[in-house]
Length: 637
Image 1: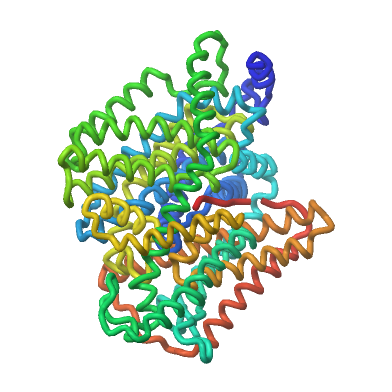
Image 2: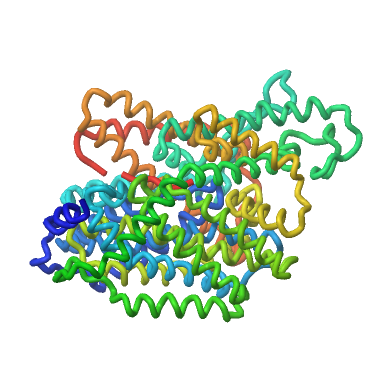
């Protein structure tokens, strides 16, 4: 069986065979990759802090690189484009790992320096790359027939059909302009509100609202109607069931019921959400993440066993390596991992000590191995990164507490360990997809691995600045940037260290997640809907409805369906990138002291609703105009 797999993989001929050499790790590709890595790091940081989700950057980056390198510079090397998308995904992965964990430090008023954030992200990112490199030959080459790596394969298809790149890049640009313009006029110049809300007659404390952001519309289109619907179901459960119920049963209470700071009769819907629902939602998200991890345990153990078995057999076969099989030498990879662990153990910037460094080495190797294989089966969007990070935090926090490292120092150390592991997981999952793309198109592995490290380096150096600016401008954990995943990590660490959480509310949320799972729903998705305001879930659902409408109108022609959905996906990616980037720019202007209007010019709900509907029509109309051929994306919860 193994011999048969090896024979099949060795007979595979990529799009650019090993006998051909094309420009690859060029100065132009590196410069464009650096720019896009920073752009998508900023965009995904903003988006992830807002809704707890990030979107894949590989296909938009591939399309943009085709448009720029092939369209503007007349370059015809598919391998250059592959380098660009590889570097860009580093920015997305670094942002995801950082914003899922590190904002908890800001919420504790333990604001880390920009250098500290960059150090944590860089060591995690480099560990993720280094630990994945020894697995490439086993997972990408030997398991070529059994591990599809869906995002990596889709990206390879985009690059191979590169002659459509110029036209497809326009879709990203159109979305970028539309999303950025709405964000600038709404939250920048304050011409109109970006949130609409209404109560329901004779239904006290029941609220329906919507953030009229194009980025949320784009997210809904990308994740589709099923996931969008489950997320909105969580929002409806919170805002039309739980909040009115708490208001009704607590309507006669005169005492303050912790953790709220006022009696229930004095609280409106937002007050009840802030005082009670967020804790219920956090419990549901934590349970949903752990349920996701438990469901993948059989795959986790089998993946780990298969990977370790494959590594033990690697040296049994003597093969002649060609250009498409050269990795960074194992000696240097081993030295790199050892140095990173030693630096983590003794660096004053992290202060996790030898115990923390050993935990990072163990959990890093274990979960990077698992993540690299799981994304090959189910894709990055379904990889249980949150669950593995929660498991790491639970174990490490208990270990620190038992060894005497408690209080704020222990909480910071535990979160730092979790952050490094989370970044390593996110980066390893993404580079696995990138190396699959490279394997299919004929890239040189060591050049891709170097490109990923450059992308991690650049993104890691800017992510600290981005988080600092966003915190000073909006406040991490605030209504503008609720940072749901980081709040969850904070609650887990606090609960173990100080045991002062409203555990009844946490357990109510956890039990709700179990119910959702028994109902056949994705418990983590519904839980995120409970945790976030319904104002976030509503526009995401609208995007899902647009996706459903496009699919329904194109259902009779598979080729047309694929082309239209992928065109809409590129446009949606542009909406997300444009709005998110303008959001970061507005934050930088606030940070620099540039006067930003405070009063909204038009306070009516009508104008923002009309603007939002125009973007909805644009997304549907452009998608349905597409005739044949196009391009895709998607990412984790």
